[in-house]
Image (cartoon, rainbow, N blue to C red; front, side, top):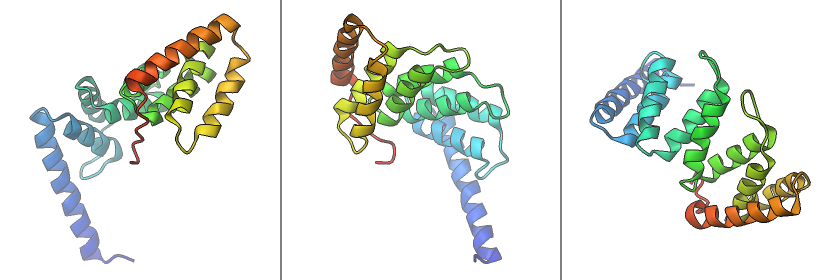
Length: 182
């Protein structure tokens, strides 16, 4: 159990970290723009402010920060405190996926597999991104292979061939298999 002084010290550190992130974000640092957005989204060092959080996450995402793109996709799909926007969330997953982030590739593949509010299922895109995940050859390779097989049942031979070709191109360009936890 932490003491009151430890809790106060932690709060001071969070406020200090927030101020540092804010200053760096305002100076154009995409990583700190993302950090600031996440801090605002979660109320770390400051009162939670979803509107400002999304503003900073969008800024970081537009400045190419793949984790901000991924995180913003999750926030938009979640719809907490603001209406969910599934198609826009998927758009941000794709931006991060195209930078080689496997977490985003996985969520993108599942979004295309299942569809969502305002987004029809797209088995060709789902198969393509599950294929990229299989090519990444990570610890979840078997899971993605099974998902790929399930989606393949919905496609014609021509669609499968085109999706395989597209997956190979995507993997060559974006399939580094980076996971955010690394």
